[in-house]
Length: 223
Image 1 (cartoon, rainbow, N blue to C red):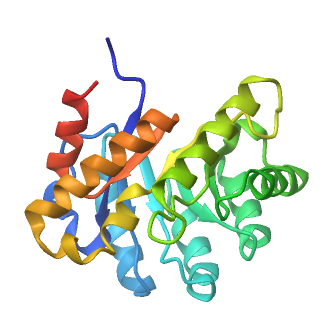
Image 2 (image 1 turned 180 degrees about the horizontal axis):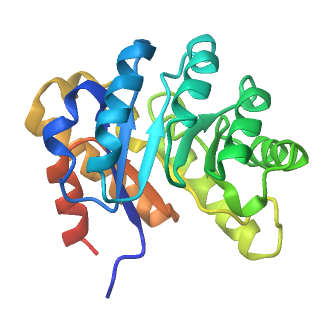
C-alpha cells in the first residue's frame, strides 16, 4: 500500500548543499537570522532542487518579518512557507498570496485557535486550499497524548464538513524530540524522531517534518 503521508526533510540552510538529493517527498530549508547569507544560499540551491520545496523561518517574529519578503521574492515555484502565527500572519499572508504559495499556520494545541486562525487568514484573501494546519505538537509541555488527540479532532471535524478545519495537517515532531537531553546522542535522536513521527502519522498528519535522512527512510518502511 502506497504511503499517502509526505515526508519533508528539513535541513539547516548552511548545511544543505550536499544533501539536496536525499530521500524525501519535499525538501525543507531552515533559515537563520543571517538574512543575507540565507538569500545567497537560496539563490544557489533553487536550480539544484528538483523536488517540491518548503522554506522555514527562524521562529523569531521580528527577524521573520524581515526575512520573508527577501526570501519569497526569490522563489521561482510554488512552495510551502512555514510558518505564520497570530503575531505574523498579517505580514506574511499578502506575500504568500502574491507569490501563489501555500502557508503553514501554527497555533497552540487547541482546535478552536486553529479554526480561528484559518478564518482570519482566509479573510485576508488566502484560499482555504492554500492553508496547512500546524497545531504545534508541544510534546514536552502538554504531553504527546494531548497533541495527538487535537490532531485527531481536527481531522474528524474537517471530514464532518467544517471547511475551516478541512485542511492538511503538518507536524514538526522532530522539533520537540531535538529538545530532549537524550537527543544529544545522535543514534537516539534518530529513534526519537521515528517514534514521534509514527505517533503523529497515526493521528492523521499529512506532512511530517524530519531532520534526519535515515528517519525518512525508516518511516517509508513502516508504510
